[in-house]
Amino acid sequence: MTNKQQHETDVHLSIVGGTRLTGTAVHRRTVTAALIGGLHVDLTDVELPLDDELRITKLSLMGGVHLKVRPDVRVRVSGLRLGGVSDEGPSTAGGPTVRVSAWGLLGGVHVERA
Image (tube, rainbow, N blue to C red; front, side, top):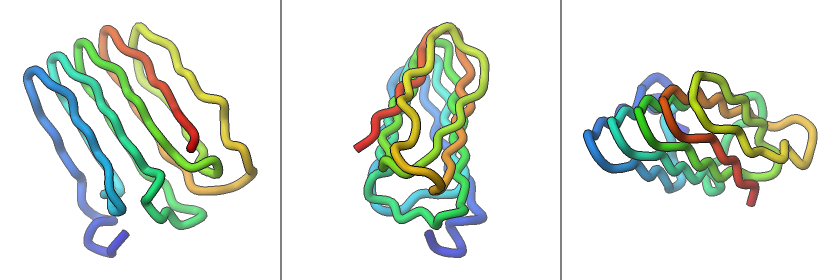
């Protein structure tokens, strides 16, 4: 992450349709809002400093969150939604943290470790 990216918030808005975030760079904070649509985030190629923390906020009536992270990343999920959280937890101790706030009527949060 560059110094500029650390202080920016990335915002995605849509009425119908999901958001897909992939690549090697990410903002420290990401907010997505949609009436109907999920969020797919792949952080496996992003170099996160050991003590860093990313925040992802998802707002929608219907649509879940699919988060793909490396085995050493800790994921903390909060918010209110009708849907569960699927996460096996980090495979190793320590590592950066990703905080997901998922707010919506329908949709769960699924964490995949790659």
